[in-house]
Amino acid sequence: MTAQIINGKEIAAKKRLEIAEEVEKLKSQGITPGLAVILVGNNHASQTYVKNKEKACKELGMYSLLIEMLEEVSEGELLAKIEELNEATEIHGILVQLPLPKHIDEKKVIESISPLKDVDGFHPINIGRMMTGQNAFLPCTPYGIMVLLEESDISISGKHVVVVGRSNIVGKPVGQLFLNQHATVTYCHSRTKDLKFHTNQADIIVAAVGIPNFIKAEHIKDGAVVIDVGINRNEAGKLCGDVDFDEVSEKAGYITPVPKGVGPMTITMLMYNTLKSAAESLNRK
Ligand code: NAD
Image (tube, helix red, strand yellow):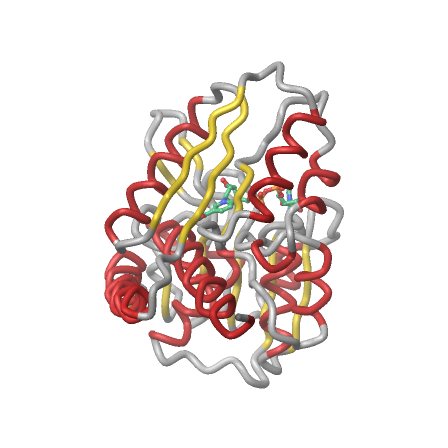
């Protein structure tokens, strides 16, 4: 079997058009969705991510505010800036680019963002709301994965989903979103014994491990849906996922490539969350 490719780039482009239309509607009601991004220090990868977020905002007609802070900024100064943004009426989403320098407590910073503007979906209140099936900002990468499946008409209810990886930003929340949609979910991680035993039973596998080409054909059953979250560099310096695409795509039913799979959905869902926040602020007026 040769897998059908789930084209994240195309699906993201379609979603972005829909978002841009909604942005125009909100603007005609006097609200321009605004996203503030705080970047601390000069981590090269973070600078690239932040630039891409600014670009996406502009393309979709949103307001974007970039706040750059020196590596040495104190935790207090950062928290004061977040407090100011929590109050700013032109800002509907606040994102602090991670990782932060070691002297700053990441958890404290995340919790200082108003849950109403937490468009990354990392605040414990939004996580709790997501877990209990309430209205919440969903974390962007897991949310993007659910949209990829929905747009590919892949049903979830009753399916066995195996998530490899249990990070707070990808593995844990994506499993929860599958559970919310009535899947049976198994989590695997670095201490799982006999990974292959579990992954071989999966109708849908999500690989969020951070190890290049880690999931092989022997890990999956014929026709499985394989979602590759990984963004890695192989020995040759080439971008690759957590799934060995060449061999797994011969056996899977569906597969996301890297690049052009999950990646483009993450920023798209960030834009969607900012739009949602702006629309909800209108209802609170
Ligand atoms: P992480 O390092 O926080 O977590 C990795 C997880 O993999 C851990 O829970 C660990 O238990 C598990 N793991 C490690 N070794 C394992 C093994 N041998 N067997 C089974 N499980 C094992 O990583 P993360 O932040 O969740 O990111 C995972 C990957 O996804 C990375 O490549 C990252 O760059 C990528 N990522 C992509 C996007 C995107 O937008 N596409 C967003 C976030 C992360």
